Length: 108
Image (cartoon, rainbow, N blue to C red; front, top):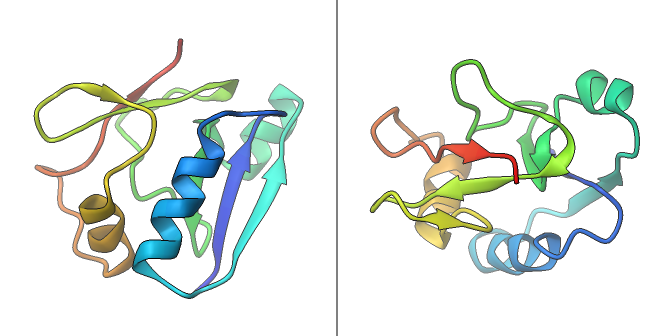
């Protein structure tokens, strides 16, 4: 399994995402700073931070949003949050993330 986090420079939400990932897996995480819209599109970045599991964003939504911008997720109660919960990450890493639990994102 390959884990990669795409981020804009100095993204404050990368650290919480990496900390939560460390709680649920010991798989090494590669981080990539993305600075251009072209690179964001090429790498599949839907805002910062974006987690890719084997090149796939498990939290992608229909239509998506993307680019070099901040990304927010919605928790199970619909609140905007900086990163997915430990439970959502655990499910995503286990391949158990279904549409009813998928986190939405938006740019701000």
